[in-house]
Image (cartoon, rainbow, N blue to C red):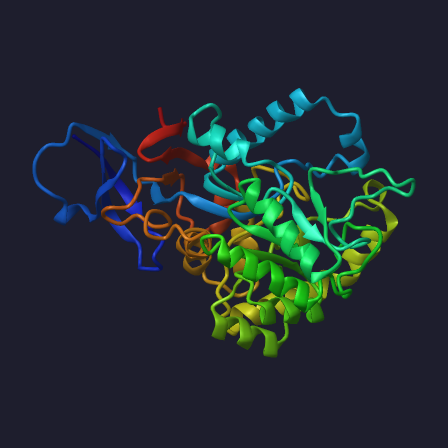
Length: 405
């Protein structure tokens, strides 16, 4: 039995030119039977027809860098007094809102356990398909160290401390035992951490290599590196990570090395473009963000120009949730075409997450994760960043959101 979605413009996620009068055929088991021009669609009446009214049909989007345990308006201290039951339900609400914003697959890079992935897969909650890192591995006093001055760990669910190559290896083993799909490491300091700076090294190159080796031994699991400053980015690339997260200190040399190795850049531009409010953030955070804002844009634009593979990620949690596709506009502002930005959020992101055989594009035989939006995002990419424009969201053919009805 086939459900046919018709009267739509198709942007299939592969980077191919859009198809102005297209059809998407979806089987009862949630696979794509056909995606292409209406003129060459298979004959025979389908079981159901859905008229998309001239809207644009795209693959479900990915966000490769999210922290579902966090929200920008709440600091670490609030987590110490939070009700854990309320926390679970709030996280579930963020997942649903993110799905309804057009994100059908998501990678959480620290802060939630693997149980959310299992609950989602079993249909107990509604949200994007999940990959999780569980916690972030870093060194004492580094970006993953959430200790308060009195010694209390404000976020034990978020950071995992390791100070030698052996400790880093054991930390990776603990994350993999906890069900991590990807291991997250800190190769540099960061903006929001009080004890370090983006230019500071995080884990040493030897510690990073120990984690990469351990993850590879565990069914080839990838490693994602929080890496903002130049020295830490270089260490992460030399260690063989799968992705550089943020990458604000990219240079020509590092762009070329990343491109040669096939290492993805996840630039999280949403954190760069979000307006700063000095009254709502610690002074050290405001100072670092102010100092890095212009440089970050210049260096990410350089990486785009030099052909570094880019996958969409937002750092949602540091910035608001369910506004994920605003990131596409920022990629375009820094040099991508709208079509390239969409590919960064679909097939390229699927490649980074290792699911490109099943997801990331609307092609025959793949899983029917798709979104339908009002307007033409190749003319106005910003429309994708407004969830009210996302009219239909489907996962494996099951419609999760339907404003068209």
